[in-house]
Image (cartoon, rainbow, N blue to C red; front, top):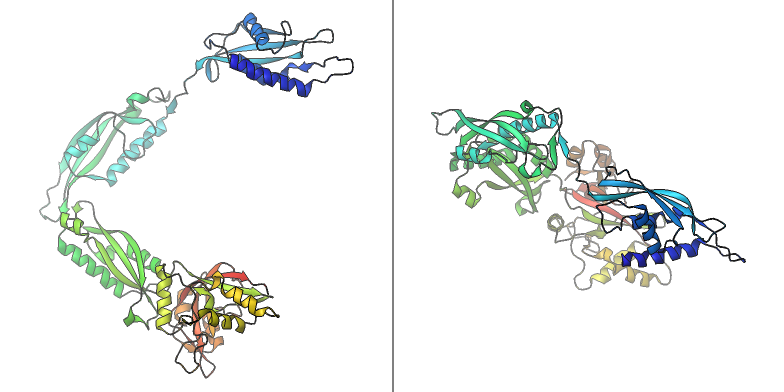
Amino acid sequence: MKKLLLVLSSLVVTSSASTIAVSCSSKVEKQKIDSIERFLTTILHSKEDDQEPWTNDDLEAELVNQKVDVAGGISVKASDEIKEGTITNKQQSILFNGNGNSKNGYKYTGSITLIYNFGGNKPAPKKKITKEELTTTIIGLQNFLDKIYFKSENTVKNTFVPNANIPGTPAEGLVFKTVTVTILDSNQPTDSSIPKLTKFKISGTIGIKNNDSEYYQFDDDVAEKDKEFTCEGTIVDPVIIEDTVITETIESINNWIKTENFSDYNDFKDKLLTQQKEILANDQIAIESVTNSAITENGANIDSIYWTNQVIVNLKANVGYEFSKEVIESEQYKIKTEIEILKIQSNPLKWHVLTSKDEKYIEPQFIQFDTSVNASKIQKEYLSNQQITHEWNQEDDKAQQKQFVESLDIFTGDDKDEKISKFVNTEYFTNTTAFNYGSDASENLFKVDEVLFFDKTQENLNNNIESVLGETKTLDEFVSTSNALTRTTIKNTQNISYYAVFLTKDSNDKYKAANRTLNVLLQQIAVVD
């Protein structure tokens, strides 16, 4: 209480300093009592005995004790009617009257009524569980039993016991109050490859968890019959899947892969999962998941228009079947295989597009190959193997890069050399390659003279890309038959991804296309001369 006194005293003095003006006659202006509502409320709720209401005499004495005003300055009228509080067990209404006027020295005028909450906090209201929630809980339990199969009678009896949580989609707070398990009929198949199925029934009533009755209660219109349930489930004696079944499954998947063309990894995944019943043709096994492992470069496949993509197909046992311990330990259920894809979807190569004086410079020498990223590393290997690119001069890469930048005619002026030197030491040349810049023209190299860019949202994207790969045509023919953009016609080059195909010009003014497409991300860089 003393601590409160000090705090409130300082607060009241501060408030008075900001609101009381002294005239030349030293006459004190009165404050309205509602200006100190927060202080009065604090005093009300600092009562040491918070189980009892205030009396008028005790509260007026406390106001004087806390130096809110002198005796007689504030009179109170504490209500004798004690009501149930909103957040506490009890509450009391108290009227404060400021007795200040022009004829006395009291500080406050006017009146304010405040509520004193006491008697301890009321418990939170119980959440009511409705008939609809009970119905949903029972339906959810049956749906659960339709999807889940149990391996033994003991597992069933240990799962469905009083006060146990209800599987499925139970309403909050509900458990089994009473539950009985009854074993019903079972089949005994003559074929040992077919699992034995045994039906069981669970029946009983739904209740509220033992320790949660103070938090939950059933709604008023919930009858005892609404809490009753009867559901059925299945016990399965699983059959161990033979090794020959797994071997046949692997062969089936690989044979299917050989007959299909895939535009990308997702195309493969979607087709495999959608068609798995027809592909596997076996009731014992299904595909659980498919994982994209890595892009690889196969030397024997270098002239193909397709990239080699390693994938992992994870098998799972269907209901009623199990893999043997040996299969699980050796992970024979994981099938590692390869597919061929037209496009690489992930991790596009960052390609900086230089802009200067309303000109764009879309040069492959500004493609960055992050060799720590699988897709980037493999695309670089492909370009190197096809002699489309090679590294910058290893003896003096900066000198060659300076020559290249100078050939672009971006930088001018007497300090051109200084500008070029500074630019080639920026991050824009990190992880880049020369793309045959400066190579002898007589060498049998693929020099990038033009680029076809394919908008990833265009119609017939895959067919359009395939129609140009490895082909020789005029530039107009390439563009008209594939709806591709060129370095001249492309407009959007700011942080947007395209599929790109490099073209090299021959002696007949025709262009030969590379045999694969790259995944690139164009990013504009403004260069100031």
